[in-house]
Image 1 (cartoon, rainbow, N blue to C red):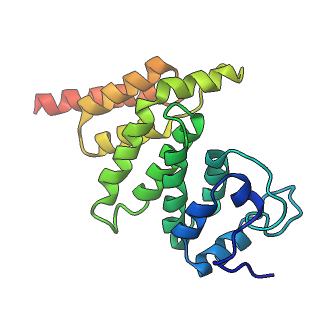
Image 2: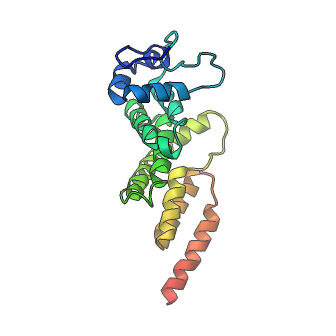
Image 3: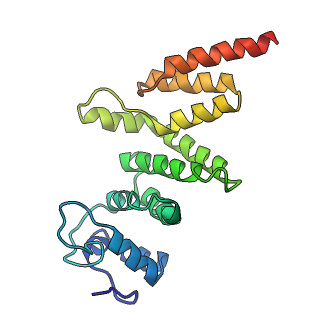
Length: 203
């Protein structure tokens, strides 16, 4: 069965309350492509995204998981649409939004050599992710892991600042990430940037 655009989807899309958004956001060809490509492990239903019994679920979590299937160069525009809706449908302090900001940052950063606006857009998403780093850390620690993982936003801003020879900015970013407890080579970056900053001042 090939699902047609004028037919309302069942499956995960209906269960997450995304029917109207789904119909408005994609063409029929995109519907078929997305539904066919999405094959989550453990689900025997081949087109579970739009077929089968709808089971109530969180829209933000579904969209975030769905977006991860469309990270290749030719699918990047689809990932952006899915991540934008993830951000729109998640609470400002939700961990899913933290992950969506990171994924969107990576998506745009990959186009930095092709799109003049891509780098600034990527860095804006990095700052958005940093702005919610405290609630994200709280969610992670609530899981009992204790140690925080790496933080894409902090790492990306630090990398770009160092490449642009903004050593003061890179040090500040690394120090903030370290204070909050995010894993990373922050001490090495601080040491390296401090050394380079001193050399520029001596010139």
